[in-house]
Length: 225
Image 1 (tube, rainbow, N blue to C red):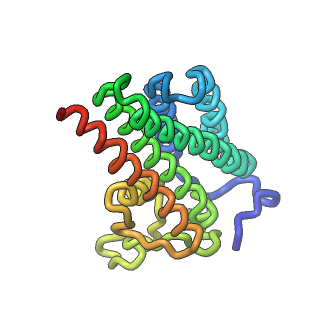
Image 2 (cartoon, rainbow, N blue to C red):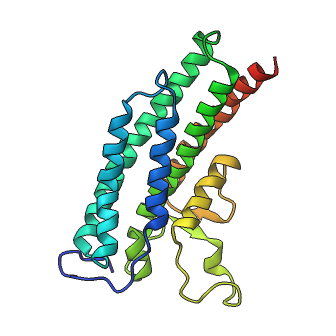
């Protein structure tokens, strides 16, 4: 069964959005902190994107999860992630170019702080993406109207003594999934079940590996010299 937004005027259960809103604000703040020489967009555009993204999230809470706002949130969030994701990759590319061709113009501390900002953003963006696409989205999961799962979590097979009977993954579970992928380069308590999930985790790991091994290591080397 799939959630029909055209026939349902209200949804029985909906996930609280404040962790998602906080994550979007943190992503915007981290992008704002990246130096102008690395950033590809002016700072004012970040504020516009942040406000634009927070509108449907706030509307979902006010309207008690009106399906129209849930659908709007999905498309706006995916658009947000595509734009910010491309920007994050370009910022990483600029960092690598600075490291290779302008090493004398950039300090190790600047390189390190910029690389940490890009690395954290990588985690937060993929956590939002995983949260939105798995099993049809948060409301589809809570109302048991989702399609095939993209990830299998350890809680789903745990005894009821440890996990509630009707347990469903929420945003924090996808944040931990994204964090594990960027640090251990693998899922620690969940398994990818679909090609889409595997490819996304591979992409996240590649970006994280580039930041840690190439940029971060070079920054530490400069600081130690």
